[in-house]
Amino acid sequence: MIKKCLFPAAGYGTRFLPATKAMPKEMLPIANKPLIQYGVEEAMEAGCDTMAIVTGRGKRAIEDHFDISYELEHQINGTNKEQSLAGIRTIMQTCRFSYTRQLEMKGLGHAIHTAQTLIGNEPFCVILADDLCVNAPGMGVLRQMVDLYAKYQCCIVAIEEVALAEVHQYGVICGQEIANGVYQVSDMVEKPKSEEAPSNLAVIGRYILTPDIFEVLKNTPPGKNNEIQITDALLQQAQSKLVLAYKFQGKRYDCGNMHGFVQATNDFYHLYAQSH
Image (tube, rainbow, N blue to C red; front, side, top):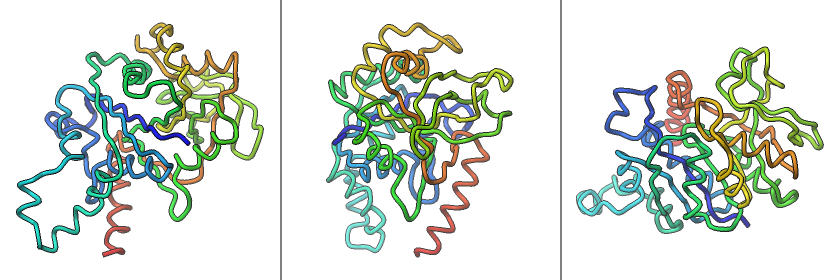
């Protein structure tokens, strides 16, 4: 069983300025919950009980969210408002949280390598909180990937088909389909031009990584945008061992941009209204 899930959460969230000037983008609410709480709930469904979060300056709100708020809880004690905290209380009682800071923004690969001290020598999941994934009423995306890991015991990335005009925003894979929706990766390119992309299968913010990725990242030179890219490290692994890409069941909202964020807010609001 994979027990640890990593949340890289040190980015500035510049596409949502000025809202993110003093608030982490991971704390932006979709209906009545912040993005990162949806991610933690998805990780819990996949069997994880230890959440490792890579933060940066100005991210204290994330730590405070997964902690007791004595004044608030005293004020609402015994009122119907208390029920609103039931979900976050369950998370706090079930999970352990640990934090480390990424002092410089050097890319996702660098953020993952920074978390080695929290992860140790075991396989782990990675969730990028601004990719909000749902698969009602079936298994969550990360749970699907954990089940796949149990069979193959290797690094796995989640993928979905995107328009060729959008591939420059993603890491893109090329590979052979070895099972329904499961591809053996042979090539992986970070943010290619549409005419140079090996496919339209784009990597989204869900990964399962084996602990040897840390040594690979340590020796991975800066790539696109002079950042250490996880795609470069995974491509290096794919040249010597099995790396899989999985076309998941469910829907992904790209809440890192305004369009996806508003779409998710509208859809989740209607779900929330129906349940209340």
